Length: 162
Image (cartoon, rainbow, N blue to C red; front, top):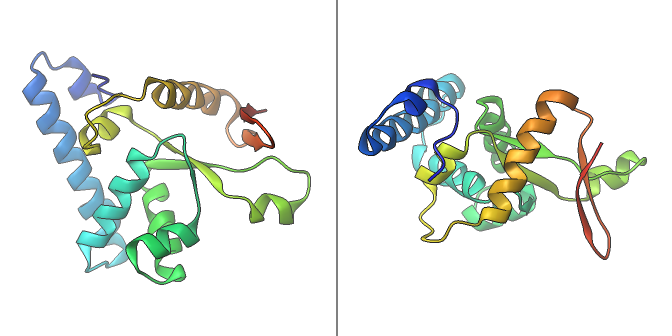
């Protein structure tokens, strides 16, 4: 299991302690960093969206899809996704195009910022090592190239365009 990068989690010798810490960190981020800051009352929807985004690392996503999936307005879906990104739970990778309209029209790719949180939030029994590896590569590229990373998709997909 991947434990992410939180120091106390990484340094802990107990697997059970690691799980407890990661669950607590996730809950604290949802409640303290997002819900309290933005005065969100419906914690269930916020938490469900956050779990969905975290578990969908390396997949394409759109605000329209989130809105339909959780039966909320586009504005609320957009706000919640922005709040989750502001809290550093996830990051969004834009589509590569020289045309702004084309970049905005295409879905973004989502990447979780800590794979330990993804492992705790995911209810899947199988590890998708390809998606997890892609996220690890993204995290390394993000440290070096910051906002100059994109993905591209035609007949095939290019995971990273720098």
